[in-house]
Image 1 (cartoon, rainbow, N blue to C red):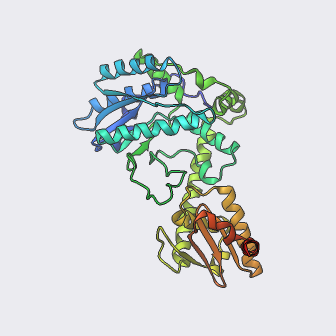
Image 2 (cartoon, rainbow, N blue to C red):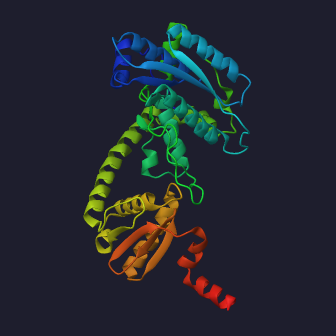
Image 3 (cartoon, rainbow, N blue to C red):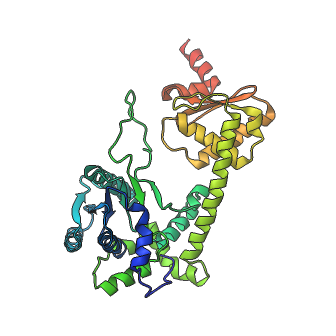
Length: 377
């Protein structure tokens, strides 16, 4: 997105060998190939790398047809033909059913990853490779800055992470979470430090065609509008390399903060941490922590015992500020967030599973509970 440096610099065999070296012992690799230039280059490079090895993983390319564009079937067929040339198995995955009218790109992304995770399970693969580039990294960091992300978001994309992130929605009442397919599959981005221009140049040199998805330039989508800003930002020196450098520095700071959080958890926990809690923290020591460390420790405890999905940063910050004020004033405190109840006692903070939702208003607001009793009487 935000850089066109390295034009004409091909990705050669030696560089490709280094990019994929840590994947050699995998039993199988799933390649997510849309047919665009980046993913087509990924398939080309991985196939050539695999042929240079005496042993290595089985390769399976998958293309997701979201059912949103009539050209998708033709593009999937083109990927299938190229995969056959390269000696790679290929499968088309289809996102079926009604499509949402809002948040289309995000919901399509979630559906795509679930389909790919299921495909990985079927072929016994624990790694799915995508063709995210340094340009995509820059775009992601800028997108998260605009959305008001915290430091974790500004670190950008990692080279490897679990393919399926935790569910946002809680399970239905009375039902336990089930182990869904793909939960042990990892998404790997081996091209994350490579410029898109270099991949395009590599394809041109190999005389390989790729598809063009017009939705990448559709101004209805935020990321497309950000791409339109790329030339102006790059002219001011804010190109993909600068964004990627920011991401690396934030990840370095993230590692230090997370180390401090782990140390604080070990020092202040009065109980073992379990999924159902309670988690008990020594209040005086907690109040002395740097604000970011205290915030993350509290968030980690809520995420462990809560049952309503990820903890929203803004709500966590508000709760932490109120907790700090209550601690300073020496008053009792009890609030719920993301399915967890946080209670400040005389000398400890307790984080435990919150009661059923219908009881939470009364728990948080005793006056409401008294009013209800009075009305009933």
